[in-house]
Length: 427
Picture: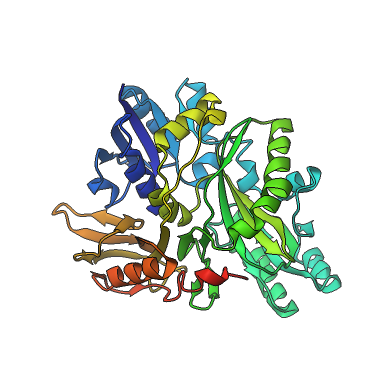
């Protein structure tokens, strides 16, 4: 029996999901709403011009086309209850409900959940005015990480070195209202130091099944400088992960599974745990209620298990019957962006992609096609250049070699993605 799938989203993550689902013998047809220039060229996949937040139109489409499963990529539809809306119409959908998605949509909710269930996390305080927040920073020299409560496209985090930097961040949040209502409250956290690890975890409400490790690069510029972005690159696996795997299992995954079983919501979908190794111990930095971007782009090419079967198992509460298998190769992803990103994006610039090295895949993010089939820029993050190799050095070399065959006006990228993979990236 073959099935029809609807994937919601338009970024590199959604292109990678469509690409991987197309490899399943169970999947006959994939619709991507709204998709991008890359999904339009992916096997079995067709773009559908429906915005991700138009739940009514998406539900009508799913009914009309007898969609067997919908997969939600971005955070906003999850935060606004797309899963609840689909389930109310008896439509199968992969992702957490609105209540469960608060683990991402509200950092206050997430930190209080961590504290309630004694999950290891940084010390923190919650504030709704600049005055009280700044006073907390002045009174506690460890309080140097400022996060807006709501969704902010990965840009609502300030990692500060000095008190004046904290004050500047709080002025942007509370006075300039850079993040609107998402910045009505802030979390101020202890700044931890050490390697970060992205761990995406499948959940069916009872069982947790962690993916392979990955690590992303959030800062815009080489050397981890410049503003935070949605992600400038990633690699998998993380070399130091085996050193901490048992501690992560014992101190994070086991208590997290118990906490979710006890919660007054059922979490089905992907739960992204942002981890940091501080003083040789794992700490939870944050949750995302969906696949990470760009980590997904370097994880799915390594995954051997059928992705459709994993999604089915999550929806049906059968995840305990699944096992994950991975190829042993390293995968590196370099994100090509508009040179004005993250402040602004690029639109309508012609993209050329020449002959690429073997084992390189390009996942599209901010792209579109015109009527003539030309590929055009359409966003801040434009392309994800993903390469596999027997070592991180080989994968990185392949990725940057491929970039030399790609061009668009104003193209920019970091030159140091995964070059320090053997050391484990620290913040």
